[in-house]
Image (tube, rainbow, N blue to C red; front, side, top):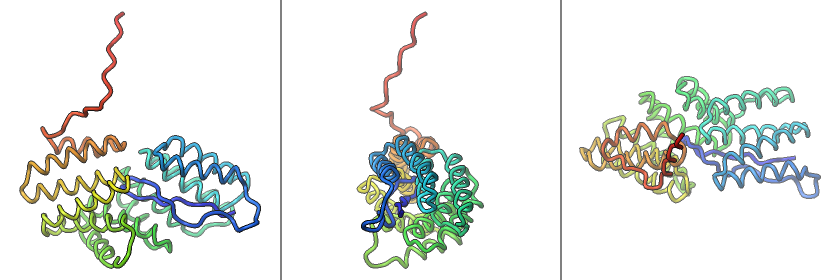
Length: 295
């Protein structure tokens, strides 16, 4: 029974987008319950109901174990770990990845899994374990799935920029420069963000970096990928600051902070709010404080 693995769009955020093949061959028996659990999980991700998606992918994984279906086990484990990463639970994602690899190994599948490597890289990056994250991202980038390879290259670039590894960042920028012709818009956004980061790292044109980062943010806004959009706004803020436009930089940091906070990335939101300084606007939609009950 061939299930469907969901590909992540990293920021690692990580928003989910479908990739890979769909249902089983015509006329072959299927496990309706397993299929429905996976489909419901995917639909919940589309609606940003991540807690529901986690529950559904967990249910799908249990059904896959009952079926002793190695492909479905791998897909459900990958999807569950990806959702956990989107929920800002990187430690849980790592636990799921380790358990999934063990379940696959028991069933004779010991080859490297680039998808699991990619999620592992994202989780390790969130936890600040950069050298391990870089190694996992490199393994993922060497896989055969073009979607996973592209996102793994993005991850390599993000880790390299955060670590001050300019050589790796330059190599990732060179990779994205080779992606020509008709490519997915999400890839264009990733390429523009990496180019902006590389320009800032190499003392290139800060104005061009600003434009590239804003193009990445615009594409991601249209694709409802807000966490990655916020990260691009943060890069644009760096470029604006490097250009000498402190006011624009503060405003961009404030925008990045508010977007990231609503997308659940409180760590980045707090960092950007601090960089925004007095420009950090009050959230007009915050829930009012509940008055203390009198004793």
